[in-house]
Amino acid sequence: MDSNVLISDTGEILIHHRKLVATFFEKLVWDPGDGAGLVIANTRIGRIGGLICGENTNPLARYSLMAQAEQVHISSYPPIWPTRVPTESDNYDNRAANRIRASAHCFEAKCFAIVVAGRLDDSAHRSTALDDPAIAAIIDASPHASSFFLGPTGAPIGDEMIDEGIGYADIDLDDCVEPKRFHDVVAGYNRFDIFDVTVNRRRRKQIRFLEGRAEEALTAPEAMGLPE
Image (cartoon, rainbow, N blue to C red; front, side, top):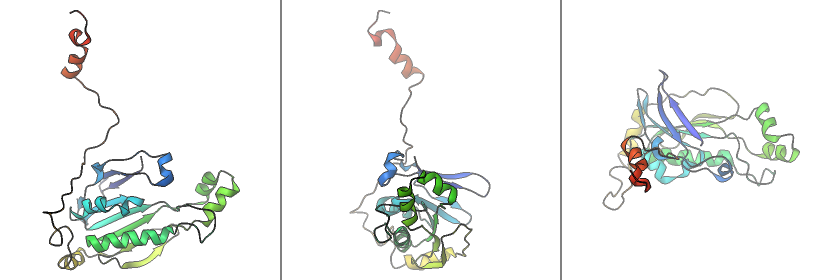
């Protein structure tokens, strides 16, 4: 399944998040994830959370991170997202959709955003197109996603990056405080007597093995209908 891993500066895995729902044609490859990764990492540079691609549009997934006082939200996206015939006007506007999603989350959570898009280089282009001109045309006509930073009001910080590179931004976590004083959706600007959200953060497994006494009980002669 599609996953994101957040690693600390000491090499510790802080968050391993599996994408909750595969999007569109991803269902041909990926299995649904689980809620085990819907956690916030409390680091020395802030409380960090993140979601993968289209699940940044999932209000409940986003709310589960907001409710944990998220201060920095990381959104990861593929380099392109082809959906239609290879004409510029018909293809899905990847960059616009990602900006809208990220800005909405920042505005609602009063947090900073780091939006990171993958890079489709020449080697990846060739392996994806498989020497098929029709596939290559769709890839070439699909808008490339960009990487950028946003502030707690949803406003951009610096410029977008489309080409490969390293982005830098200075953030002040105190900027998250003032907007919450008039519109905090996980505190005073909500009705917990009306809304009740439950998140299952157990890691989903495909199979369970019973060990020890439970296994012995299942294989005991009397349980199998055999004489002792």
